[in-house]
Structures are given as structure tokens and as C-alpha cells.
Image (cartoon, rainbow, N blue to C red):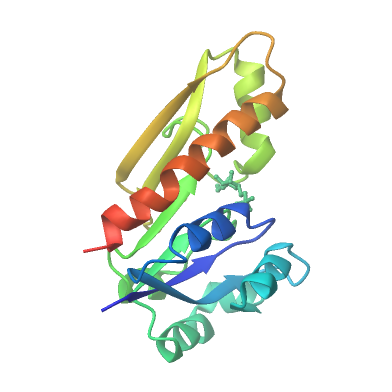
Length: 189
Ligand code: GAR
């Protein structure tokens, strides 16, 4: 039977859209709801186009977690994918979904993780460091930012001439290629 996946996204939602489209013609997953903490996030427009219900909760809803848990239960959600989601996941959700929440981080954790390290902040920090590689990390979510067990990493080269936007583009390409496959590997059986 198809599993129900909730995607959490705070921003553009390009990974959310990529994952949903990847599974469009399969019966592995349903995506009954996209959950955001930002009313104006572009992910809502994508959800609308994809005909998927999207909802916004406040920061305090995410801190207590009760309302989120309720909507997950209403939608019979089996697992959660964080795709550019920037708030901490409350313990009540982690306990309700043990090993059923995964996150993507746009760098090679444990480098460039933790609070405030998201999106372009990460790519700017990589650029400033002089590192010669970056990449993506997909990991289980626990109660500390970016510290859950790592499931998958992929790398890209960082050239000395790359701008932080160039690094972002390389990392996004890795995300689009690998994230749907890892979602299937982790939650598909
Ligand atoms: C992605 O690059 C994702 O790895 C990153 O936010 C971006 C969201 O892009 N996540 C984090 O930085 C989490 N700490 P999208 O909204 O277009 O998918």
C-alpha cells in the first residue's frame, strides 16, 4: 500500500516539487500535505499547481507540536521529509515518528551544520573557507539541528573560481538527483 509522506518546507520548495514529480506515476507514495512555517513561501504556489494541500503553522505551533501532530494524524502520515525546512522539530513529533523523519542539508555534515546554517549561508561559508569540495547530506532528524545519523552523502568539487551561487547550483543539482531516490530507499519498503 502506498505510504503517506508529509513534506515540510519553509521556502521555495524546489526539492518538494522535485520529489513529488519523481513519484507522480508510481504508487509508492502519496503526498497528502505540505506543511510550512511561512504563509508567503513559494512552496504554496508549487503545491497549488501540483494539487496538493499546503498549510502554514506558526512558530509556536511548531514549538508545541500538538497541532502539527493532529494534521499528520488526520492525513494518516507515515513519514516526514524536511525539504528546506528551517525550524527545529519538536520532541513530540520526533517521538511520534521515530526514524521516520529525514532532512536534507546542503553541505557535507558535520561541517557547516547547526542553527543559522541554511541555504545560501551555507554556500557563502563554504566559499569563504577555501574548501575544495561541498555536497549534500541526508540524515535522520533528532532533537539537535543537523546531528541525526547520516543516511547518504554526495560530493561536488568547489573550484577556486566558483562563486557561492555556483556552489549552490552544484549542490541543488545533487539534491535533485539523489533526494527522491533516498526517500524511496528509506521509506519505500
Ligand atoms: C535546499 O538546498 C536544502 O538543502 C536547504 O534549503 C534549500 C531549500 O531549497 N536546507 C537547509 O539549509 C536546511 N538546513 P528548496 O526550497 O528550493 O527546496
